[in-house]
Length: 406
Ligand code: ADP
Ligand code: ASP
Ligand code: MG
Image (cartoon, rainbow, N blue to C red; front, side):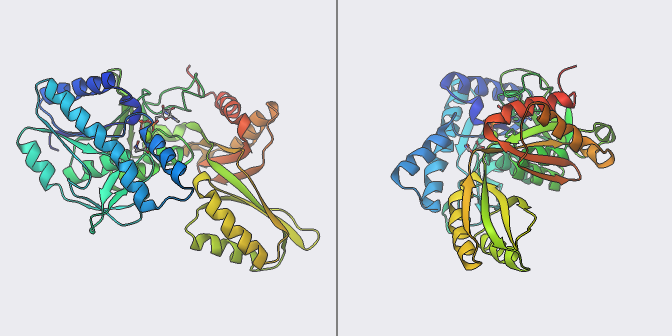
């Protein structure tokens, strides 16, 4: 292993100039220890949301290519400011956009996939003793169009650079001290996990724990790159994400998550005949819309209701398609509900333990929270409930499984 670290600082760690200076100091302290450093940064604070807000003030359906042109500017601001802050401390640093360091992606704007990273330019600068600062979340197509890697995409930039450069570790600095048993902002009693497997982290991230982008965990798992999630404000060990280890299996439930960005669509009185669901869901799949949970009611009258959930960002596109499809199959109508949330429990140990679902349902029942949909897998159980009960549900389930501080 070479003495090279990739560090990523999220938007929450650089909300103002004082914090950028704090990050610069931290980066320099590693340089002093003799490390080569590649630093990935996100846009300042809520910049990405603000830029998206501007776009939506102009039009309801902005072009995805132009969205990428717009939001990628956020990261360009932070890399330059961080480089200046490091210069001020008397150290050499150079900032780059994704395109400048050759992060080549496909052309699926707003959710592009990294195809290749040409590390030549980064290596040259590292060999000159410079701290290299790279804009997170962005890449470029072979046609030189700017792309972005999906929300939270700076995490993916960091893991991909760690792999491409053969880094010793990939450190993700954020505004919490690591990965917790639940979002510490929702469940103040949540406990920091000292380590967690890729598999569990992938479930936590996919089911709503914002702390890491799911795609970044997937890539880390694929290339076996350990991730260290830790605080950018304190000098403390955080959470190590690595391969499954035995001790983790003994823990039945490792975390509770909530996702408030899903919507439920219901199609009423669908003819209860073979092939109908296939027709509806084929149309949705053709539009590249991901479906999460599906529930079909028992039919007594020859017609049935089908409900399913989609990501909030896909709702409008999904509705257009579903309305057309429901006419084709002669269903009665379509409704939707955005006021839902999905709460989940996750744990590798659930594979070998029964009764987890019952305990989860009980915790919700005691709090008079109605379950609208359920889905399970080997290592997770999810329930759709009303959005206004989401935080309460997380706290209740977290308590039920005794996940809090001992
Ligand atoms: P960054 O700006 O560093 O990328 P994010 O806002 O994307 O930070 O992610 C960090 C946030 O993730 C935390 O502030 C926390 O509220 C949230 N979060 C949700 N679930 C968890 C969890 N299980 N452990 C830690 N943080 C979590
Ligand atoms: N700034 C981007 C976002 O808000 C990327 C990131 O933060 O990782 O999604
Ligand atoms: Mg993030």
